[in-house]
Length: 125
Image (cartoon, rainbow, N blue to C red; front, side):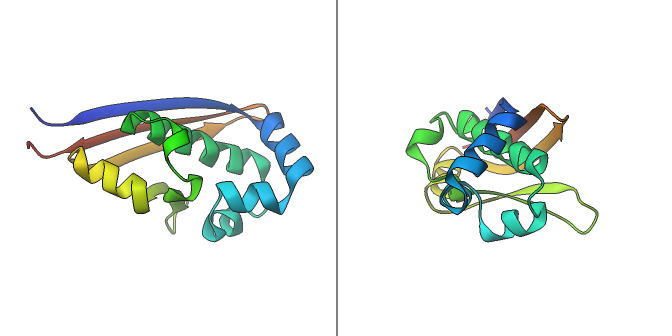
């Protein structure tokens, strides 16, 4: 059977804003890579969308975020602004062990909510 898994998460934009206000760089550096922070440039809704994708990926991997480092899941954007996923360290190893090789991600946000949706597929093992 070909591996297929999905994950979805909703994040509250005001919650992310409160965490950024309260913890500043400590929160940002723990959750977001340098490239993610640079791309979002302080846009809280964009950061909340990336937060939601990270949670959705952890769900798709079957672990929840507790067993992964936040920065092991990186959401970058191509020249057209389309988001794509880069996995590192434990997240990359876990995806490999599950046979998951291709990821499709989508994120969207309003002023109050951000959603992240992921689909991962792979080769028959």
